[in-house]
Amino acid sequence: MRNASFDVNRIAPSDITPPDKFLTRRSLLAGGLGLAAAQTIGGFLRPAYGQSAPGTALTYTHNVEYSAADTPNTFKDISTYNNYYEFGTDKSDPAENSKNFRTQPWNVTVGGECEVAGTFSLEDILKPHPLEERIYRMRCVEAWSMIVPWVGFPLADLLKRFKPTSKAKYVEFHTLLDPKQMPGERGSVLDWPYVEGLRLDEAMHPLTLMTVGLYGKALPNQNGAPLRLIVPWKYGFKGVKAINTIRFVERMPATTWAKMAPGEYGFFANVNPAVDHPRWSQATERHIGGSLFDQRRPTLPFNGYASQVAPLYTGMNLKTYF
Ligand SMILES: Nc1nc2c(c(=O)[nH]1)N[C@H]1C(S)=C(S)[C@@H](COP(=O)(O)O)O[C@H]1N2
Ligand SMILES: [Mo]
Image 1 (cartoon, helix red, strand yellow):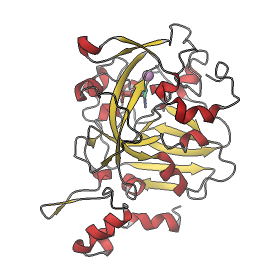
Image 2 (cartoon, protein in one colour):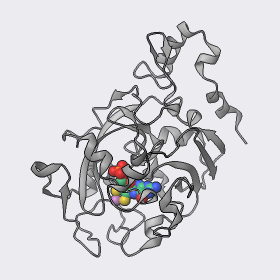
Image 3 (cartoon, protein in one colour):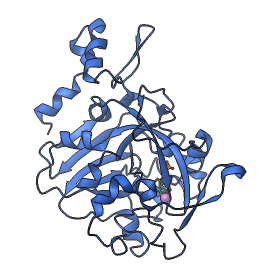
């Protein structure tokens, strides 16, 4: 069931406003910063980015406050060195095997402990949110790292619209379950669908990004099109791809990697040089980037975001809650 207050977002401003007024009204909605829904180019209306095929140019503003000063990795590195077990376990598999993955139409089902639940089209989910580019450090638990210019919007802005109840303590995300399209899901390398979760305060942190693009364009399939999570102070596996379910829950969700190997992958998964993976050290990382930059660097606590996020974990033993 759709909730009436949410339903308002289903109506494109263009449906109710003449096109010439549309730009002004939309700029107002977007706070004059970016254009969330569509853009007129030479008199043509660019499709809402919810309908954008991978590679379509997006309209966004660059967020200086939340961007790292580091030089981003190349688009090639970012889009050919991937973890996405639905499309194979080798780093080069996702780019190879996700070419025909269909991301349109796309629906997201929202439920659990919230007042506004239902199944919404991707356009509904994305429409009111102006997009920002943020250059984030990313760190995989396998001890490699990259710098990525993501495009998205704060997850908090989206979650608030569903009005989580006081029972909602965590939020859970699922990847699409579609073994016909995702060859990895025909095997049992992981328990499908891929499930991830955050404590609600982590989910609401302004650094947590609902991500739709990369290098200014709609996400390539291998990077999680059409909608994936980025939580820059946590290991990359928290960044669930191709999200089609969001659930507000009372108890800590059973997440894919923690279920698969609870001694190796914790729910919190905060980047922590002091807590080793049982099979390797997390004290340093290998920065991907060709011969010149492919070198080891010390791992930073919370991946360099400690000043912003350490207060979320005050009083918690981060060796127990890894
Ligand atoms: N659905 C799904 N999401 C996933 C994964 C996966 O296998 N399946 N791998 C995770 C891991 S381990 C990492 S490091 C990041 C990699 O994201 P990237 O390929 O965009 O760099 O995606 C995460 N999200
Ligand atoms: Mo990872």
